[in-house]
Image (cartoon, rainbow, N blue to C red; front, side):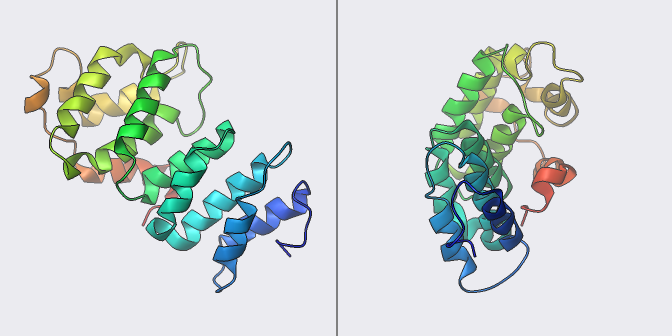
Length: 203
């Protein structure tokens, strides 16, 4: 059904999303083919395919998330980042850090639920301990652009609020960056699980 339905038909999006809730040997390959759809009207299909692959495969679909991260479509990129944050492997830490920096520099941006910055921060924190120097680099980045954690005018400042509750040492005026420890991994996982959008992807 997924292969035979036209790419721009809404039915195909529904089929792709449904494949995230079932098992079967053919589903992964069909979703990867759907992820190759391009052109106007195909964003929802790619997003549904990324999400379904994350639900079905978890970290085994890491390369699919990385590929989707290079999409020209903002929606596809956001879904890819969400999948990486919830269940992706290490491997794109520097790229995600650069994307977080670019996001924080745009204070007038439109945000999403879950917040873009917090999604990327979750991925970065999950893998910050994999290489020396990552954690102090992240602390320095956050301090330099602290006001950009949430968009200007954001109601409730959700990312800054999470930081204040779970990683206050990383705030400006805290200890030297190379002396700041990581937040509790359980706090990152709890945030991921608190999001209806992300909770089904966490492994």
